[in-house]
Image (cartoon, rainbow, N blue to C red; front, side, top):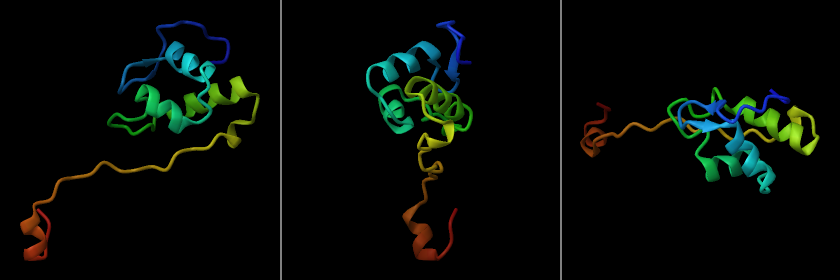
Length: 94
């Protein structure tokens, strides 16, 4: 991916974020996947970054000239499911 310059290359399919958008925020000073996520929403879709996180890490690695394994990977937070308050009273979940 390092030499690929197609601005239409989608990095985050869930949120429709392109390679150019990722590179722009990295050039603008974002240094972590969490910062990129807050600015672009990359990794906030249904897959929670499972498909784009490694590509974003490679871009950070390339830009800042650090090994990929030194890029901080954010904590995974599973999607939440609403639960009726009555479920707690009954002792079970719906």
